[in-house]
Image (cartoon, rainbow, N blue to C red; front, side, top):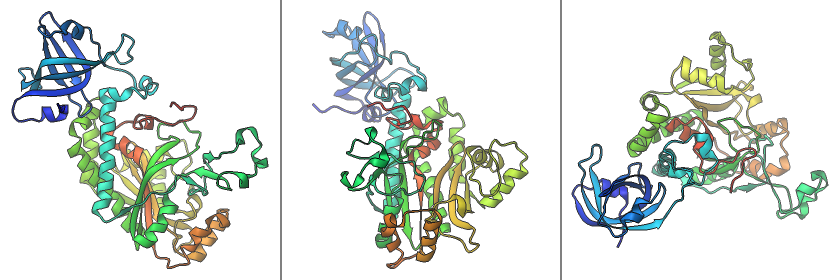
Length: 458
């Protein structure tokens, strides 16, 4: 007999006899004649109430079941007299599939996020994290749908690479050699698996650019890695990035696409994940729905980097970090712009070239590049992008200025020799997008198994 998902049962329009559901016990109340059991199968936030009567042959065994136990229930779906629930299930048969002992860690209803991070294999069984990972799944689908509807091609870029896209040097090395017990300077990497040093990718951008120069509009959506010894709430060593690249596209068209992406997807998420998002609005951020509505209902502010510096200086607010021209903005500056001054998302553009990577197009003033960062309330930077430098001579100059090893990037330079065109793109941090949509403040709580310094479970 095929079993029904609880989500489907709760959305039925008429009663139904002899249906089968399976799930895990969330709560249970026992009496001599009845047990009221709420079970959840992960298909939705809501539980379904099961009424078990004492005439069931295994009623005494059912009464001993604890939170977290798995059961299979065959019975009749009937209107519920209880408040807040449309249907309940009158059990005819209950099979016990898996019991939990007294020391099951989730017997209590409420647990701290800090505690749940120590048991990431169990935290999806809580309401909050079950909702989070349904939202994460739906967000992935919405992102692919957004690009598919606009004619983008999905490209799988390498996870193992020989280049550092950002030039930051925060790389995880990949090797089959016993590097740990040797001085790296003495290691002969020509004998390694790839014959050279290899790393986990920090970005798929440079690789996917090559496909934009043949297929037009493309994107990559995959894991990226940074060996940054940071324990902030916004950083993780393994995270996912969405990186579109568009040929025949300038910086302003890229800003248009980024803004449309954020607004379109948030609107769809609010429609498709209503009950799960309401949980976060009730228990995580009571202003969440208002914030999301503000984002989708208003145009984003767009100002040059220098104007942002001027606004921050004029605020007379005492910041921890220096505001002089040529310094990158810190989280405190981003929060002031989005949460205090403008009270909405802000896109900054035309950054000093000294603080941006070599591949960004140099503007006519020769001191700034056609770069843009999107800042959102509560998160700060969520998107970073630019028009790419399509001119061979200028790109070569910028690479030399940045001390890039030209030999390692010859393939990238060749793309500027063979039919180069203006093109642009950006990177959207998937986990930061989830933080925006749910109001969650720590990136560790939007990733199934967070990878951070000194933390590697599984």
